[in-house]
Image 1 (cartoon, helix red, strand yellow):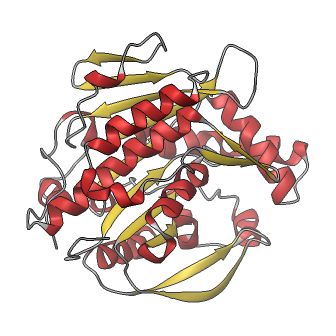
Image 2 (spheres, rainbow, N blue to C red):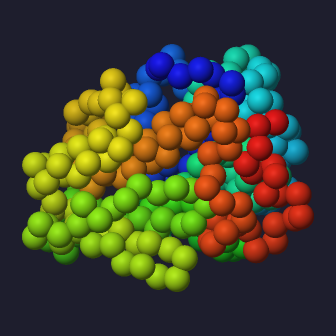
Length: 331
């Protein structure tokens, strides 16, 4: 990719079940090239299989149901360029398969439920994204996914959602405060279920690109400043031409990665149908901006991808004294 590779750049994508993590990460992995990316799902670090969870009355959202210590150790090793022997959880039948040898690549995309639960885990990432769709939309997505791909009935999925809600409220949603970027997709007023408005919350801690060029022009894209946060609102009905103009502006700010440009940003599937969302494409290119600029910064010897440490919403309200050094340093 034209970079020296002192260590991988690690992206975290955290959100509740069926929040859209795979939709976001699949496009980024495809863009960066699968040969350049370790794509790690933290579900692999479940402590119990599906039958054991049912016997114990515990959900996979609870920290006690996951080997967070091993997850932290493994992400730390990946960040420093060391291989791991990763466990494998099989969603098809809820059991564990043989462990997988993972050799670090140029990037690591890590998605899951509890990736920011502790300060030590937060320290493993260069970029932290949290997905926060409206709860009623997430429930619809989960019913659609689990019924079509995992063999559940609608009643089973809804019952499980209700059972998981206390753990979602206690353990999953509070992680939003630790993210650098919070992404919320929501239905557009036009009534088309596949046309999604997007809102991005950009927090201090990462050097976000200048967004002044991408607002206006009659398409309703706005940037609102709120204390230490910027809120970028992208309407789902934004036209392809305008979306490509915005993407081009962001690409111009990372000309050293121009070889990655593709028209496949924003693609997603509904069942077996391949579709495209212009708002999703803009979100993906903004996340990509942070990955490639972090890579360039580290490759040039900066050692850290963050502009500041422990500032704004990106830091944890319960961060320990050692967190800032862990988050920025090359270990």
